Image (cartoon, rainbow, N blue to C red; front, side, top):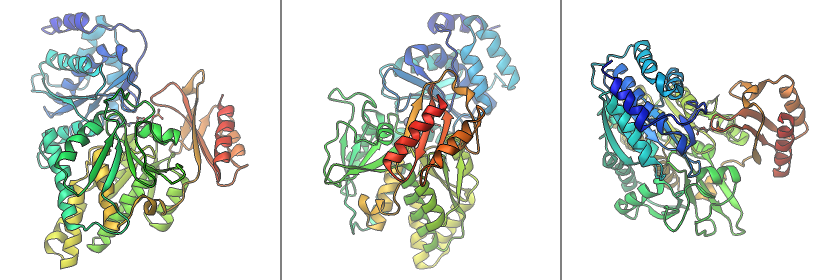
Length: 530
Ligand code: 16G
Ligand code: ZN
């Protein structure tokens, strides 16, 4: 084949050096960075094939391991609408990543046939990376893969994961925006400024926000944005990667959420709200320390309820009849679910862990708010919802027009392709400002049930299967009964186990009426798994 030279090049430049089987999981491929070069090269090949199957539309490749520590890295593909790679292709990606160098050529040919790709078409691939020192080398491997199959790569350098998703979407649908980093800032920050012009600052809301940047890319981008913000929002940025700060080490959204501790590297002031981002800027949680230095966490569930109730308020002010719903996972705090369904009267769907599942379920509503408790989430608006709101903004009564106008800007500020820490930050700040609330008032909506997460290392994590959005364990036999027995000993008790999709461990979650009980229940369940 004319491509023989391509595969010879691959063998030489990006050889497969490891026999360890690697799987395209919930967050793409993720492992030690030094095991990934051939994988990323091959994803370059696959992205070209995928682009051709999609008639030459642009595909994205993001090099990141998100909240993992520096030695890890990863790669994931982005589909033309800016969404996660279609699930049926995960198996194809896994197959291509694991074949020997000798079989790379035949396997690639076979995949091209299988998916019916017209290799005469043009192909376009956008490539972005996080701040890891191993990322540039991997991004270069992706470029080589794209060029090998005569696709056109475009490198975005260091960007947040959601910025790349946004650019892919815009490249394929120019009504969404301009496919550049600057275009992203113009859209999101522009909408924020437009809204703030109309919203007076008042009540308990203050314009100072501290940020923990996890020593990753999100903080760096906020540092760019900061310069264009006036007195609408005064960002005080920490953990920007200088001063020996290590990526995600004892800081960042995942650390804060899982350990329920404040990050290192941030100077705290009592009651001052802090936003904590993750390493690639697609997750955000808030917290504050009180005057006794006790931490109060405002996690993804809390952000979801704030956004849902603010949007509901705007919808009723503009008299729009649209179905708003919220999507959560089993990790959502029970108190949040109760508050949403009973106080806000908003319907809730519970799905399996992983953004693609939430995203998909949110599309079933006119307006779907989805968030994982860990802080990954966004809001999706259907065409019908957008048109309805637009129409009111043009033809409604004065007050309705005003609210609809605000809502349109709120939509503009939302990154609908994927959860986005930066976009979410502006959505939260707007909702708080509009309601005249500080973090303490925000916290008063409901009281979280104390919870605990543990991980257990077992011989084979896939021996555990689950059903009902991971809330019920179907194997090994007897485990679910045992969990239920344990849970019944606690008031407001709830617990579940699931195999991790990103690490070789089983995760245990428990909540109960006191922290002591939640800790004890999680330990007992972990014991039952072991
Ligand atoms: C991935 C998922 C995240 C999920 C996490 C669970 C995406 C983009 N990311 O990071 O949503 O919460 O995996 O990890 O889907 P686990 O399976 O190890 O608990
Ligand atoms: Zn992330």
